[in-house]
Image 1 (tube, rainbow, N blue to C red):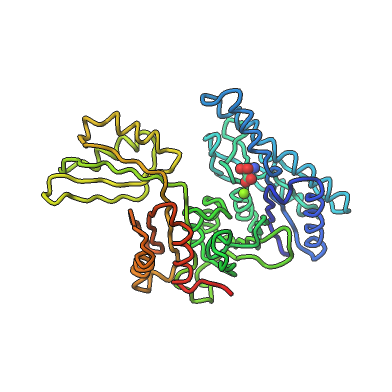
Image 2 (tube, rainbow, N blue to C red):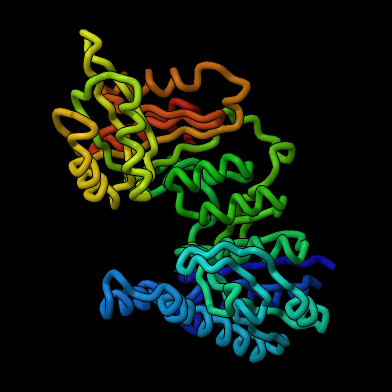
Length: 407
Ligand code: ASP
Ligand code: MG
């Protein structure tokens, strides 16, 4: 018997009518002879509201365990309602909070990691011929407190449950109909991909494509869970995230991601000597500020260096403050900060075996007069930092340069 895990996001369960439609879809799968375990998000907007209430009472120093107790509550509502909607359609169903479904996490409240899922209760429910409806985004810490997995965490709950149940598939139902070559709201010629590899999806997700939580993709890759991203509002196949050997289409570049969550900092005129990079990045690391792209250039006389790097936009003020505090130790002349930048990345496993991918990117941007402020690469991606005003032009030109344009 086929066992599938289906996950529905917040827009798919936004009100009772939509929950009824989700129930009807699940009923069709049950009638087709599948066993179905469902993972749900809270209703669209609910989690934001819950977070806002916590911040209203205490903007900064709140108890993270109590924050989790509050923000985990949105999913309790949707799972109960879906179980009722299924029962109304004559489909036996039972709902489970994270702890009732055996989701064990570490104690990192607000960003907990799943350690194990003790699936006995859920499995028994499925074996009794019932649909199991599980609250996403939450689990139980070693000391018995409710934890949450970080925003967007119900994708990770679904993949983890699929892995633990050895499900045949994990279908992520959302408000888009799959993974696109780039953001279709910006590039009209963006195409839906039938398939994408785990590695490419991992890059796309971490580089700014918002369809799946990055951690859920890493988990799917580690456990070889076949994930499908598809629309809960239409009845058509979505995008399958899978192993490279299942990909038939021979595309060198699969997609182009972009992220506006970037800010650039240049530490100018530092005396060039061993240890300057350590002197700058040490204090940033201590402040838990992640640095992404890094460029170091040396002045013509070889005496001074400029260090340019990126941090996430939200960290920019803190990063500047940290550097100013360490000004004497680092010994720079000035700091230049710029939040009006975007990171554009081309992604594709075909890069491993093809030369010239980066050159094509640089040449395409040069032809449009777009200046590159920083570059970083991995085996399967090339990222550049450019001024924000050129984001759309860059995406459109790169999309056609790599032959991704659809009809
Ligand atoms: N409800 C949670 C959130 O909004 C989890 C999720 O939707 O994945 O972040
Ligand atoms: Mg989501």
